[in-house]
Image 1: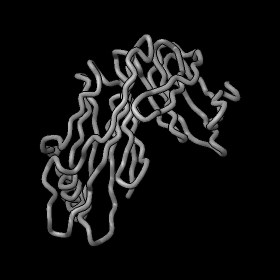
Image 2: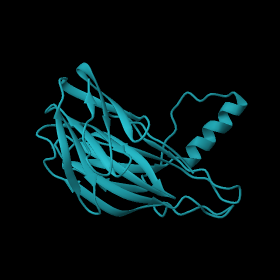
Image 3: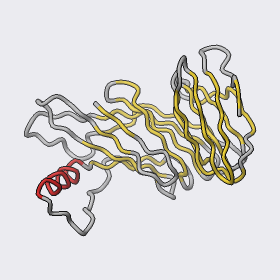
Image 4: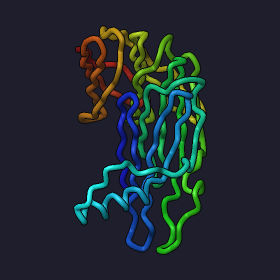
Length: 226
């Protein structure tokens, strides 16, 4: 099983499931909208058509039409600015999102991507929500970046110029710490892991700020910021 995600504002995260040759491979794409919803699409047929077209060299001019979403989540009351998806276990994924209303939502979804060769899984039967949590008023302004980290942590950033770390509990988000960031009109957040649960992060907007911190089961504090 393989997974990839896009975290830019307005980006479309993509989930790719790779199974053994005995099973039928399915591909899903997730997208967020200005009405506060997150939709998941089965793009298996579309990707198969594109792959076949590339092999023949006949590149289509018109975009391919997608069928209706297999699952739609009403995650927020208004527009979704940030979205991040991370695999946690076999066919289980965490979907984190931030909204214009200052809230953060986390949904645990299960993707049943496998079906026997020659058998199509019915639309809507492939993805389901098994658990969810949310934090209203997590920030005082638009949440423009969320990033899932290891050890069940979530990092968020907002136009209110606060970088906040949350701990993911069974059915809630628990506040850990918050740090003022020097970038005005924050637009996006990107993070990458180093060694021993260390992280580097970049906040961009009207300027750029680079941070470096370490995570641990106990302590959970920024070691150094630049």
